[in-house]
Amino acid sequence: MFGIWLMLHVDRARLAARLSEMAMVGATGRGGVHRLALSDADRQARDLLDAWCRQKGFSLEVDTVGNMFASRTGRSSEAPPLLIGSHLDSQPNAGAYDGPVGVLCALEVLESLDDLDVETRQPVQVVNWTNEEGARFRPPLLASGVFAGIYDAEFALNCRDVEGIRFGDELQRIGYAGPRQPGWPISGYIEVHIEQGTVLEATGAVVGVVTGVVGIRDLQVTVVGEDTHAGPLDMRSRRDALLGAAEMIVAANALGLEHAPDSRVTVGRIAVPSDSHSVVPGLAEFTLDLRHPESNGLDSLEKAARERFQRIAHDRNLELRFKQMFEYPPVAFDISLRDEIRSAALGLGHPALDLPSRAGHDAWNMARVAPAAMIFIPCRDGISHNEREFAEFEHIVAAADVLLNTVASVTKSR
Ligand SMILES: [Zn+2]
Image 1 (cartoon, rainbow, N blue to C red):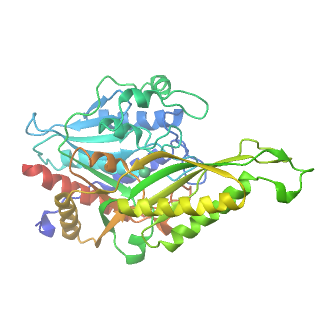
Image 2 (cartoon, protein in one colour):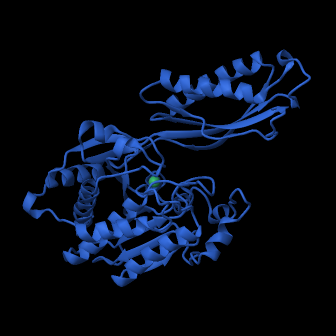
Image 3 (cartoon, protein in one colour):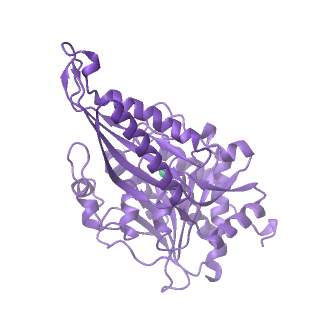
């Protein structure tokens, strides 16, 4: 256990300056950023990170899927590095905190270790993961997934955006197709991130000790009826797929509400290929996103959704197809890293709270290959993926301090 007098602190002025400089890259003018993976704005954000790391003499490496790593050497050259970081890409017209806060707190920790002459046993590496958001290239958490061996690099390089542009080509274009094969051994991974919920805010806790990530299952639902002219056919004879899908969306929402507080059920995307004002839609496709802390919870949500949708389809003379898109099983974070984070928060005098993450994060992939943990920062009104996203600077500093002390502690001997 630390005494208060032994706690380390980051350089808050430097952290503040870096956060505001990074928030200007791809700025929307309304306080947010638009920085899709492998876009020009993403390249500018990467260039900025690269320049900061080089100024400080941290060696920089990029792997074949564009993940960036800045290293500070440790006492032992053989010990696998401890990774800290997050992502710099964003959703469309999103907030300036989701991702960058984690990367910049990590960089701040690396610099503070230097400033404070803290020697670590293993190297410490700051990472910026490529395409965390999945807004441009599906699936999300793509390049950390390659690092963790969930996907091979070829799969990632061949992903295409909606315009058909290949991930690998964009990576080359922005100059971040690196030489190193991803997936080297690491001793652990710690990520700072905004909570994207209201649990910390509601309880007045400043530091979130994340217990794990809920499981997420994504299904594609296709509703098939028959295209027909909006005029001549009697309304009762229609097989309107969009109308059926609309009822299914309402049913999905009711299902989530009935299984509170652990469940989340979301339809976030719908496509109507006929897309014409005078056609009764014969086809509608939507995504169904199910979240629950336990695998069997996901199973029962899916079962209930299928049953309800089938009933609606039957009543409206529609056909229904389900296709599983991807699944992330629930993950528990490393107990001893969680203890270290809690002790650091306590030593710094910050109220801490254990809570699960209901959003996917790169730490989720990393938990499959190394002890992993996350530190959550309160986020105003729980709003994220939105330009109004906001986190108090004091809370960001608290998380950076907690990360610094956690890193110093776990790299003493481990
Ligand atoms: Zn994020």
